[in-house]
Length: 148
Length: 148
Image 1 (cartoon, rainbow over the protein chains, first blue to last red):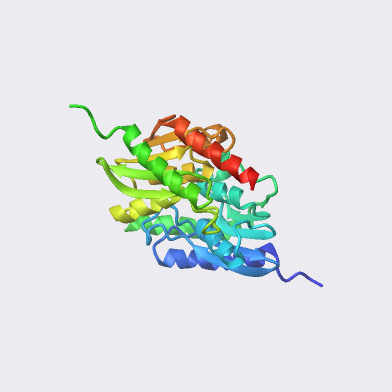
Image 2: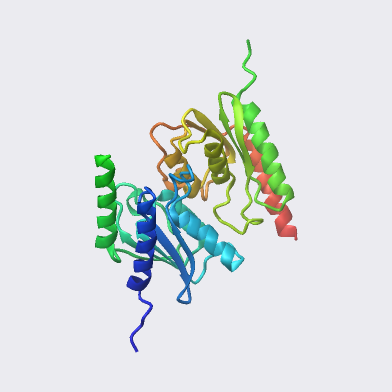
């Protein structure tokens, strides 16, 4: 039987979150945390609305998933995020001991891989899932912002 | 005239916050954010109580100070924190463009300097202010925890 719950399946839902951020004038990044194919957190970037540099989609997702699970460690969980996490978010993911991180577009300037941020040894990384869609949304955002 | 508002003056207040964390069974780290010698955020680690790896003293201080200022950038602000920030907190401080970070004890294992986390080019770092006091509090915490 074909697996319905693929990385692409969940990344599409993270992209819907990114579009919600876009509509609010936020840099369009969306995130999901999933355990046993169940979505337990669904968030998007809110740094402008909350006036808070810590309000990245991933940070909210970590807090929300831990709240759902009643414990601070995200073992057996997967984060789906449309853009490669930054130093802050990768640092938070390190502490969470999350099992898997799946990201869409790479962030060549501020992404944790270029910045050399350390990820927990128990964490697996999957790159580039629906990266084109995520990248297009980012480019459209910055293009529209330059026009205004 | 002697300057009353020294780094030691504010770090003592951050140490009081660390002691409050200690009393709650939290890893004892306290933080303050100061602008024009005025304390605008005063926080301590709450990761256990909130079941949230993102609830470090510094993260709460950044959110709280931005809320006070009504803007997400912490220009002209100084963070006082009893322990060297981790990757996550240093990453958040990067985004905040904070002017100055003063920390007490170094964290040889998880501190941002060893981890190579990038700090904003506009940020000045001051190390080792009341480091002995902060270090003693940390050692006392882990010693008591091992006994239980």
